[in-house]
Image 1 (cartoon, one colour):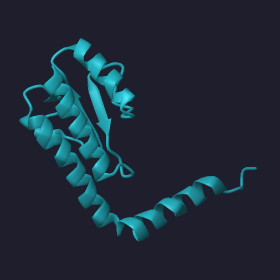
Image 2 (cartoon, rainbow, N blue to C red):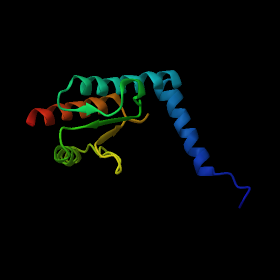
Image 3 (cartoon, one colour):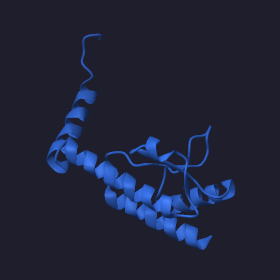
Image 4 (spheres, rainbow, N blue to C red):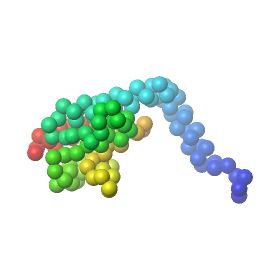
Length: 126
């Protein structure tokens, strides 16, 4: 019916807002965590000779960190081995290629550190 509110959407938003306020500590704390997560990943990539960010420093996203490996073959192998370690969703956009780590609000700092550890070990193998 036209006048029926989207109950599931409203309920979901309520749960997310409670989580943000009660578990995280509010929007300012969420922003701090997102900045920390992004800089953990960007700092590693910037210091690496193996990985390269695709976005310029002044245009980088806090949510989607895009990067390339030396070759497309290595990118395919990286994505395959990442999936074996339960690190999914790293394949870049189909029209651009490369890799993309989506580190949205629900991604923990520990998860980003696990990704960086995997990236270190993968680069060391190559």
